[in-house]
Image (cartoon, rainbow, N blue to C red; front, side):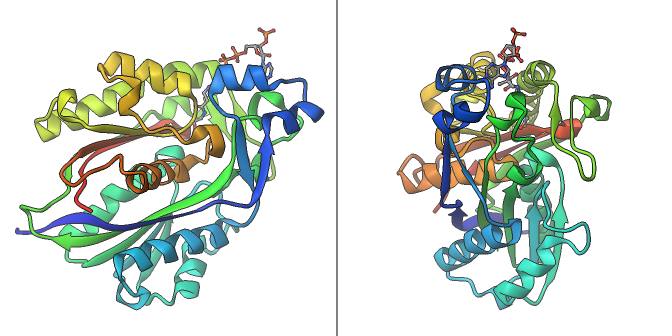
Length: 310
Ligand code: UT7
């Protein structure tokens, strides 16, 4: 089979309303110092709908790729915060963009974008030519703004990429790994009509361990070593989690992308937001190898090794 996939465009969307740590300290027993030192977050963007943010990010990715929505073969929306229970928010995005293809939501929490990348790649290997992958979230709707242990962490936003079929020689997805540890479900959950509950310390501990494991798995599959990786693009939950995982992997922090200081944790939008930031700031050159790694509720984890060629 002479087929592979590559990214040919990316886009982002963030709400206009900014909530700083100082704003939160007015209503919660917290401080800018505590939030900055414990998480690396200084501010987050709040507002909009998963649909609207997703459309904006998707349209800019399509524009960059020079692809018309009518030519898409699938729309995948990675989200843990759909606008409604039924139908999938992807249906509404598909309609607004003018696409005429299959569309579905994918919920793998903060690993959703990496899961979606692998699913999109699989669709392309099965014959699709163009796949739109979006990560869009409005977590602010599920945060208890009176709970300082979670309110300071999350933000809203979206990121999207267009995947295109290419030859096997030009295939950009060099290796991947997906995992889920269902036994850890209780450490991070949100029931219908409720708020996000999290055992922060436990999630932190597990996150470092599973990030390292999923990265090593993908590297092994691609027959690459961590020295071959130019840039690590991790899920943006906590600077200390990123530092700790990178220490264990043997990657210095200057080889990571971090946007969480101004986005907060945007779940499945966080990796495409970081990817777009790195690409648009010249931190990814043609031929560079990026290691995308996510972890989240479930507890899910996933990694993807990408050869950048935009
Ligand atoms: O997307 C994936 C999901 N989420 C994550 O990856 C988050 C993973 N966990 C974390 O990032 C960290 O565990 C947190 C940032 C949530 C918490 O940091 P921590 O260093 O693990 O703090 P802790 O939970 O051990 O709490 C330390 C202290 C506690 O007070 P006592 O018991 O020592 O008196 C908390 O009550 O900090 C207190 N605390 C706060 N103080 C000021 C908790 N939240 C706050 C706050 N402001 N916002």
